Length: 166
Image 1 (cartoon, rainbow, N blue to C red):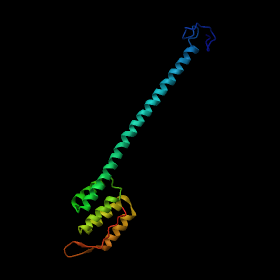
Image 2 (image 1 turned 180 degrees about the vertical axis):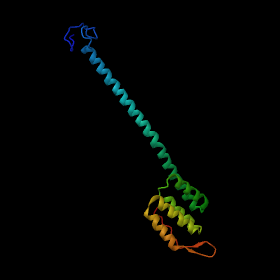
Image 3 (image 1 turned 60 degrees about the vertical axis):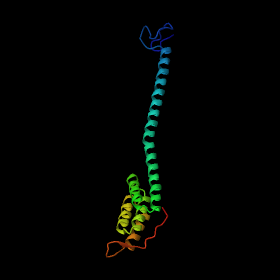
Image 4 (image 1 turned 90 degrees about the horizontal axis):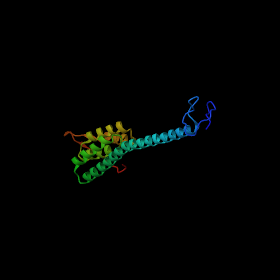
């Protein structure tokens, strides 16, 4: 085997040139293969770590979304059973999980109007609009505000119509 650096002939078992000390070509190729193999292992490990991190970040969000959906379904059942207290608690919990979604605000307003608590309905609609920027919440807020007429007892008379658009 001939040294690329100085041109001296070496035996096939020599790893380095006896004259200049350069690494001989046969051993250089083995080193390059080892480096490529190591690089592939490192890249694979980085990809596996990235996948694990993605799973850690995505899965809790999916659970949170499922919990939110379950809260809305349960709250709606309580509303239909006229158990407004439980429905209200569940809608408030849904808001704490996803404050940027309009549905729990709209449904809470329905509960409050059914109970004759127009001021609470108006306030939750305003809060919902401030949190979400949703135009339907703003329209409902304005409608609620216009329809409320305060009586001597502090309760409100209303002509508020629930819409099933949410």
